[in-house]
Image (cartoon, rainbow, N blue to C red; front, side):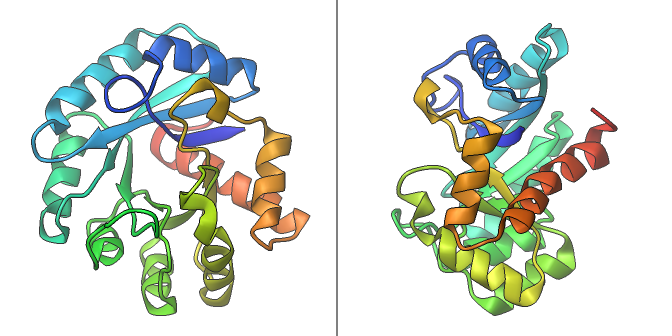
Length: 216
């Protein structure tokens, strides 16, 4: 199990990074990314803190530094992503156009233009934007988080139509959000995908990790 969307106390998560890593390890995770919420005001501070933890961590689970660029206006997303990478973030997510928050329109497309790793909970993404994500190699997220998950079926269907890559993440904010591989498979299948497709979705996360950090 690989989970590339988890939050710590560096934004709105409940756990310090060490406990987050330990609990993920006990759930069977081989690799996680700590992707706390950032905007123009805190990106350097948050990434630096997460990178420091990752460089000194001794857990068996591999922990990657990342960010979730959140409620940043579309015109500023690329700059925040660039600053995150410059400070050591390996996984760049953008808080997509979920149906349960007032995310600004065109955020999904701006995320693709910025070349991020994935769009978190992209909501009612259009086939045109999903196709653009497919061409750019930007993954779309099937979310395990209540609320954001409401559009999982739509995201899965559109991604299947246009060939966009999907990944599954929990968007963990508290210990009870962490899931094992079996639960992840069930959530992905509940979005309308087959067991084989669900396995492929989980495998896409490993490909992301291998591309940025080498084999696990």
